[in-house]
Amino acid sequence: MIDFNNGAFFKLKQVNPQDGFNMVQGLLIQGESVLSAYRGIRDYVIFTNKRVISVNVQGVTGKKKDYTSLPYAKISAFSVETAGVLDLDAELDLWFSGLGNVRFEFTGHSDVVQIGQLIASYALR
Image 1 (cartoon, one colour):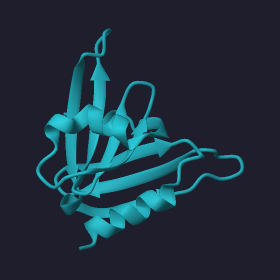
Image 2 (cartoon, rainbow, N blue to C red):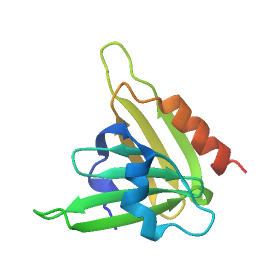
Image 3 (tube, rainbow, N blue to C red):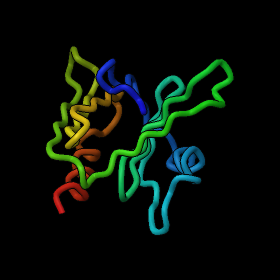
């Protein structure tokens, strides 16, 4: 499992959801679909209609990957911080029961308000 206590996923940029689907298609359950996908230097964060899947690409070749499933049902709180004039990064903090805080940092061009709405629509059911 990814060690979220040793740092956040940094500088995530939005990518085509099909890229995210290609990365996690073997993990998806029936009725689950990819809604949006973000990529860092090598890592991915994929938002589906059931969960957040973080993909930590490891090793020199990148063939080794660690997939962590973060179900919306386990979110106890979340926070969205938009980019500003001097602080160009946007942040999403999620608190999961049994796991603690998970932080994702996005480039300023990412619409974290939309991500917050997505999280709210599934976590607040």
